[in-house]
Length: 63
Image (cartoon, rainbow, N blue to C red; front, side, top):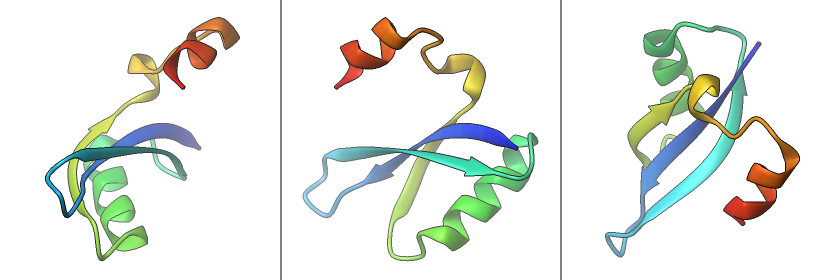
């Protein structure tokens, strides 16, 4: 299992980030899985767990 941050384009042109998990650690496979999870959203970027905050303080700072 791997955690990702999926960045989607909203209808108003802004972006929306969602934390998602997939059974694969390969980004191209995860991209395909995430696009099927959210068929009505335009996926712009998929950030790997390595790019995600590692500490609780970092997570709290993101909200």
